[in-house]
Length: 306
Length: 254
Image (cartoon, rainbow over all chains, first blue to last red; front, side):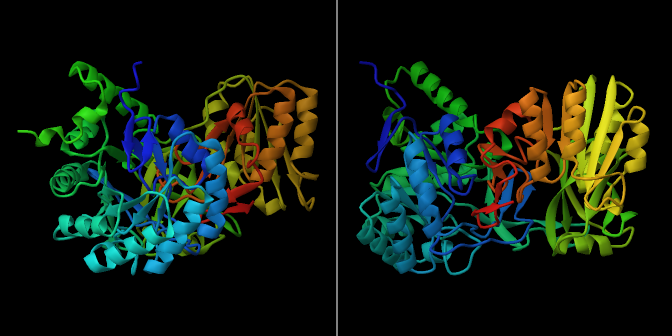
């Protein structure tokens, strides 16, 4: 009767382990998502999908920093009406939960896109209210508690699947926004999205990204994201998905100890390999054994104990 | 800067990292405030790297207008490289796809038992590096085919390839060029069980395996490729020479 010690339930989703693919990484096509699942991810989150297609920004859309990556892709996506076919296809292949990331330029757009994703078979939707580099969506929604609450309420009324809200760190008080999302019905919170950043080329004296400003991901974010998760765990009862610079099992365990029930991995896939999921899961497993703990659930929020 | 034909130029750039590139690898070239594009590497030595570029879009047209000494940005080298097979080799090139094969041929010509090349193009001026490649190949083994018959055989490159594969045994086929051509060569090689490596091209953004723009099947062309072997090419048959993702992530025909 030894059940998998990495199993965890989160907002009604049954995960075989607490690791998930973060939104924005690969995540267009079924085969990419399946490859990530086969590399050990417990769930996959798609790239953010909107109501209509977007080609995103011209290159450069990604620039390497010393301790991470700065990106401004500009939310390229095929639009939900095309993407529903990919969702249906993915659901016939994937054996892990499929979470569809959704963005919109209004509460109505979020709700309609989320509804179409859920009807096509998405196991949950994650609201991108934190993309830092596209105007009138993303963090412009997620930085205002009233606007955020309105979006979450509309989506909750439109879909009967778990609704996850991905929070922006580009705010004065993340707790205020988290509470607004939770009171509006969010089933889980992902913390955090990228931090606004940029890079300038010294030879040409030009900003490198075509959009000039972008979002920083990778190891530089980890201590900041960890603090956000720790604070959220103290103030809200909703399950938290930790995200930001996780590259090894130790990072992952830190997030779990801080209060995350699951974690998302993105940049590490580029800096390492998709196999990072298996490596991290093995590391968490070994940690549990070493600490003589039966389940990953036992360490969620453990650092808050006196 | 060297003009190869009316639409194609070779640019040689100073970059210590890219100068260490191996044949098959690519770099990301940034033209400030215009675009950043992937380019396969034509040569790398002495702290310099060369790329051969056909003027087709905004970025490549802008690049063609730059003057010697102007500054562009480089990232790389990225991706994997061709394996070095020293047996009986057939290279198949089309258009600017011939550039990385020239780089590879330079590494292999002294060691390979046999080095043959079939090159295809629409017209004579688009047959790139014919003289250099002819010198690197073993005698009488460079076959050129043009669609308009302005040089060499008047046919698609696949015709002489099929004849060659029927006539003699090769240990490895290296291919780079338009994907429909690669697909046909792959089908010919697969039928005969010949080892093959092909360099593929897709719309690319990040170049480091993150954004998913350049996927073919389960593979990322920028990180798992751009060079794929026969077994991998077989896995992506549904897309090879057929479709790619557009900038909005929609599947579009090649």
